[in-house]
Length: 302
Image (cartoon, rainbow, N blue to C red; front, side, top):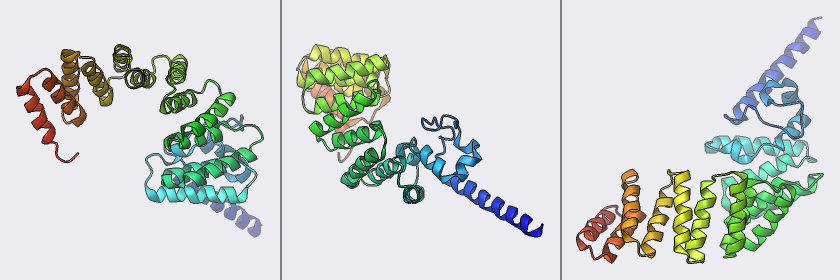
């Protein structure tokens, strides 16, 4: 009897330690995570059997993304998460999820790990029984960030063949086409983003940039960037590009109005201060041009 009680006490201690370790490693805002492979489990913290079963926990990790795990984390916590993922991968090498998460964390910790992360995403795809959206999407995002637009396009088209209504994949594919200056295709996919999420300010802004910078249609640029601001007025660079579009089109009073509207909210936003100064110069208003040029210089080193 005494041996049985001692055995139970050891089990309780082990379980308490495992719960404590999980509490330290779990994302602060991700207690309830939708799981696609564990339909009977909706809350990681509420299922003690899941926490004690490394195989089921490994399956659950398939659906945890690195950005959710390390967002806002300090370097020590990132190291803890990395060690945890590495341990899970070592224990259960047949699962794709921890391999994918390892790639995410490697890339987040240092962008120079891009090739290593892509190799891990390819390995995750090999381990996955079906085409793995996250693997192709992540590879596309890395190549997009590296400005390898053609390669990014191929990965993102593959991801969209798996999840055609993914807003993020459509958006990044549009960005790849934009980088390649295939304006019509970029606009097409940014409009798909707006269909998926009606009133998407970022897609409207990007369409405006394409019209302004690539198609040299300033009236359309003004229309779409104005629409982006009506949907989200919290982005200073929206105002900056609207100010520039008005100025390049010779609509100087409107450019000044938008610039001053921006500077009332962001008084030290250098690009708009400079744009307003240049607009006053084009209007031959030397007094105001000098005021804003001095204001720009007062900001110090750029």
